[in-house]
Length: 288
Ligand code: C2E
Ligand code: MG
Ligand code: MG
Ligand code: MG
Image (cartoon, rainbow, N blue to C red):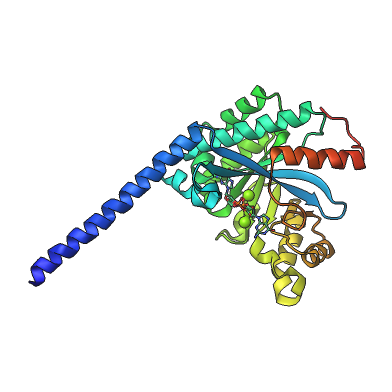
């Protein structure tokens, strides 16, 4: 009968939902285990001065070295971590690893290089964050200028007044703030004016067509001009071709990040890159 068929369908959906729920639970406990058992890795992508090729900073990007699935990209586990309360231990791990690697580079005689760390909304909102940042820096004997905090517009827009206060407090402690993926969120220029920032990262979607001129490059050109007006460092994300890099240089955007310049790499590869750079051109400032 139709009623029986309906019940059968219910059972089917219930089962499908149960399976989805238990798959999620399994993934959650997998991730919890990964964080606690050394399966996370940090890769570093250089920010490059495209006019000289010099590395001006790096961004720390987390990966999950899964025993079965191999190297899992962050889009596949950051959202889950945010949902199931694992973002705190994940961010703790990222900050610790980033500062540990910074200390190792300094001890190896390399100059201090600012490391950008991406903050998810719950981490930015965590009232313990400023003290935590100071503690991890102190543990590794690093100055506050060694960390850049990357946040997104949508994260700031959830509570603008609170975000303005939080950004101000972090900057007062010496941390630099970068607005990531700029142009993809919903913040108005009015808000941009209110947020105390150091760096504006133009989202990759605006860089793709920058070499084509006309309408395509108009947005990138405007953001670069705007950033300059506001006294911000402007970084172009996702630069993949020499034509894009040159078009950006013509627009006055020297700070670039993307596969053309360098892919994200493990800490040891970064050390080699910086050694090669130092050998080619001795640094003007003494290492700390
Ligand atoms: P994001 O912060 O905007 O990072 C830039 C992403 O673009 C990175 O992907 C990077 O590998 C990729 N990329 C860089 N250059 C190019 C290029 O020339 N072409 C293309 N197609 N892609 C390029 P990834 O490493 O997969 O990270 C994705 C996102 O995951 C990041 O976007 C960031 O929002 C988030 N994420 C990464 N690490 C962390 C972390 O430690 N904590 C948190 N909360 N989020 C993180
Ligand atoms: Mg980022
Ligand atoms: Mg970005
Ligand atoms: Mg992006």
